[in-house]
Amino acid sequence: MTHTPPRWPVSVKGVALDADDRVLLLKNEREEWELPGGRLEPGTADGVVPADVSPEAALEREIREETGWEVKAGPLIDGGVWVYEPIPGRKVLIVTYGCTVLTPDQAPVVSHEHKQLGLFAANHVAALNMPEGYKQAVAAWFGRKADDYERM
View 1 (cartoon, rainbow, N blue to C red):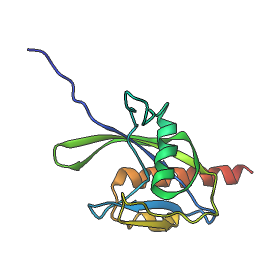
View 2: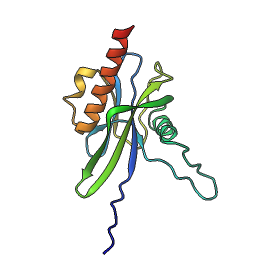
View 3: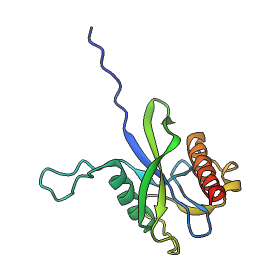
View 4: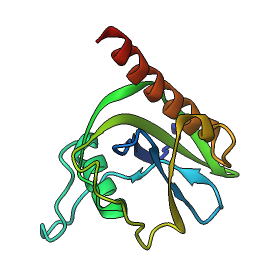
């Protein structure tokens, strides 16, 4: 008997902060808050839809499409790669990057893909209806920023 390994979709997500140091989150159809992002685009054979050249490029495109923000993706967040099961039997590999928002003073807008958009201070994230992996990634990114400020 031949073993067939599981195939899970990969979703790239980003922790992005506005000019007031609030994290941008989006509410999905399951009434959960989530980080912006999505799947890599393989492109079409005719080239009408171009393929993403990297996970970072896919994340930058996804955040622009979902919120209107321009970001620079990277680095990977420590502990930000995890497996999520949004519905029983369906697993997704989540890969989370910290992002530099290139348009931090621009108000983000919610796209048709989500129900709501919110900007949250670090101390409000833990109480949100949100998968634990996202909460950990947000906390790690805020923690990294605090460490950076302490070194200055």
